[in-house]
Image 1 (cartoon, rainbow, N blue to C red):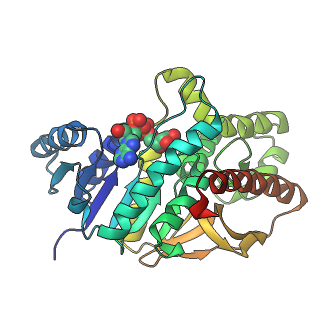
Image 2 (image 1 turned 60 degrees about the vertical axis):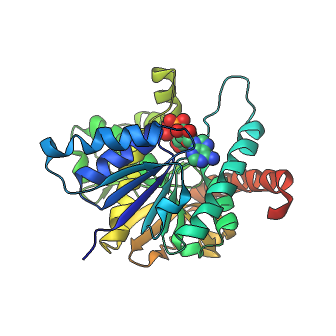
Length: 320
Ligand code: APR
């Protein structure tokens, strides 16, 4: 049986890391697409040359032609530009919206059966626009944010409790931005919810509040340290976890930006919710019940995403 084909649209920091991880994990053959001439070819060759040492069987190809992604099983989209000093949120939105249009059309024409994972920011609005432009089924287009945000939350919690990250289950809902909702009630250490751990004296409410805030600011913390770019190792790893769940039909329960059709009270838009990912793409949204405080935070986050989608419609009339 032929190896699966993984198309990476955008061969920047995250795209290159995705290619490396996909090859090392032997998830399939990798095509790196980018408009920057030489970048995808250079990264593909560099990673391919690591193959003899690593011992993986995967081919890697760099390209500027959408025809090369033909028949891809998975497409992971990081194409776009990051926010630069002096650029407003709407400036960024306008630029990346145009990128989503060309990427959406490229995927629709060449890989209409792919499972598409969007990473480009502002995430929840971009994945919505990418779906609109591509016309692919909603269950085959999703956005990577919740796995990353939950990963950051889990990492901070494991440090606070001095326990293995493997035993921490963290849960973050809502949009990928300042309004995200790290859920304390649904996050656990070996099944013990965080509020119980506060009662048991493992931590204090103040420390837990600080960890929740650090999780919300997780992306900015990395940008502040790197100064010339944003996070790429953990974002790439998170998207690979989702791609693997699809390719191997793992039925993983992972939070991601998924299209809601009434679930959690959200109608007709993308936002971060718990999902089941398997061979059917987003097979299910886990329709959890929120308490009053969580619902307020979630509604606030949903409204922020709605604002971005309205802004997209204002920029590109075909979306209205
Ligand atoms: N088609 C294909 N590739 C494009 C296009 C386009 N229309 N426009 C830009 N690109 C490419 C750039 O040439 C660059 O190589 O997208 C790549 C983006 O890479 P980086 O700038 O290194 O950004 P990265 O750190 O990988 O992040 C990508 O993910 O987390 C988000 O906010 C982040 O939106 C950003 C995206």
